[in-house]
Length: 183
Image (tube, rainbow, N blue to C red; front, side):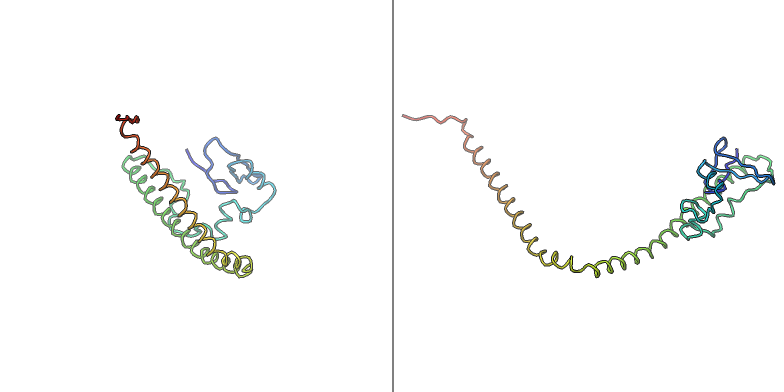
């Protein structure tokens, strides 16, 4: 069982899925879905279509050069089955995958570091542009905070009074509820 790659978007094409197009010169093109096949027929360039892996790599959003990509190359050389060799191969594949994931995470963190700086700069520019909208809000901030604190204090006092009245009502009825006259 061989998992092919889509010619257009580079996603995996599992056996029995997708479309296989064979050109007159015997070159085969595999597509994962009709969306990729349609775009190929429209002669669109995968590097210019935003949702493809080729686009993401050309724009620097995904790693384009890494030593772990060497392990993904297709090898057509038949190898005699050996259980020990297969076990070692699977362990090596898992190790390569973990290394690749770690490197991708680091690549993403490095990209986002620059994006954070850019966001801060854009926020500062936006604040400077519309400072007249923020000035009244800042001026009223102290007044608003005073009102919030006062209402919170009033609620606390009201709760204490309500709790005090409940305690008095309970202690008043502690003798059984009926008072007897001694005459």
